[in-house]
Length: 355
Image 1 (cartoon, rainbow, N blue to C red):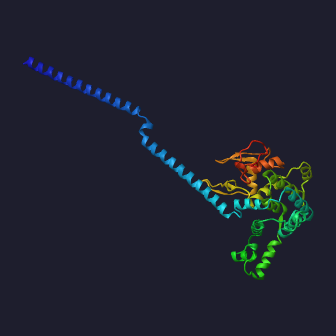
Image 2 (image 1 turned 135 degrees about the vertical axis):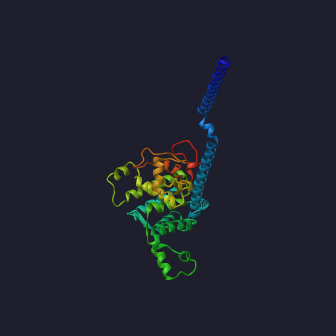
């Protein structure tokens, strides 16, 4: 009986030992599994785990950039079309104007300018006064039949400038415009209004810039006569700067005169549409544009500007007087591009599209 009791105790002890051993083995297996799962978690790649999200985000950003670029380009193109539609003269009309005035050469121009210097001491004149001098000189040189051909194109430019400078007081309806041009009966009021417009004085530099549309000559000649016109204008200023006398001696033009001449060229349709477009400060949600002023275009040409169409400055100094060569560079720059000269690729500092 003692042996049987002992064997039962031994058997129970062995069973307990087996249970402990199995529990210990199970714990070790669980620990190994948890350690393997932990190592798997530690070995995970953030990029691979979020590959789908990253891909969709990239596609979204690219689409957003394309949409923004498209809206920006459309805004620029719309403004370009608006400039072309609102232009007083078509480029073909300017070509026809120059071709029709083949006898209006540099010699005739210089004689007219000399006469204007004597009759316009303040550097300003009304359009009828200016025309009377031009016609008188031309007839004196080559007879009664010598005059500006297709002169109504020049009239159109000057009348537009008079309306712009006069503002609301000189604004006319389409019917009044017809009466002013002599089509139909306008009555006394329209005649008085037309007379009032014609009594407005304009800068001589603007009138000469307008007359240069009819000048039959090379681009180099056109640049030189415009530069000389600025010299005449600067010498006729009522309040001359103490340095102006020195500038005149060195044949340099003040920077403000250059800005004004670029504005005149813009108002007389002698700049390409693309060069007149400048960026606004509004860049969100997309870049918008507006028409730049003559001063802004000159500053961009002299100092340079950024952006997709950007470029470096073309003059040594961003401000101050300008030489004839620097004036040529300004007109030929992408920021101004008078007569499309910025598209001409010729070697030489004073190269033009002239053959």
